[in-house]
Length: 277
Image (cartoon, rainbow, N blue to C red; front, top):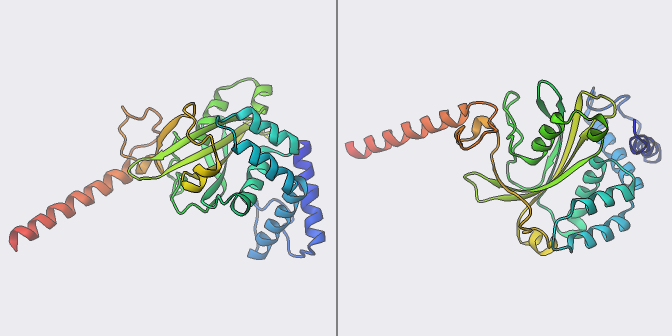
């Protein structure tokens, strides 16, 4: 366990005691949750730990300076994380707490994925979505997350890296994610690294911003031409792109094909009704 992870656990314990939260999970909430109050109290204690480790005004000042750059710079973003001595996931989660109130960036989403090295499986372990747009999370338990989405791409890259020391170092990238068939675009910042606790597992976190006018006004590098623009979808099963257009496809477009059949049937029936009328 890394020093930032230990600090977070200690900070959360302080939070449970300082906030006098009696009902609490005895282990990780991912393993067992016995009640809603346990989940809520764990959130409160975790929020307390994040605020304790990442001082609010210092981060606001850092972000204001970072957002004022005309070019995206992943190294500068990593310097911010290292300055606050927290894990990438903790840092992104703390961002989600401050951005709506202090920067007016309210349409955001946070995702955390775990993946096994072989065979490659991508599990969504934490998320919240304040954007009002359905993001590529894979609705059904058997659906496949869009492989074009940045946090998945970074996990795929990590899986191909056999150097354990390199895998432990966070990879960072940015992407403008453009939804197919929707007039929506998101700016995604993602970090990925190998797990210290399980060498067969890789982790990634992503902060997504809906590209609207408040975002454009606040983040000067939003249209940096060096940032790749990628067409994405919700899941492979819901995507109409052919294999020729998407080499990342991981499953047939079964749900999309079924939806197209229904649309075709409805169109034929509507035409028949008009002809009979």
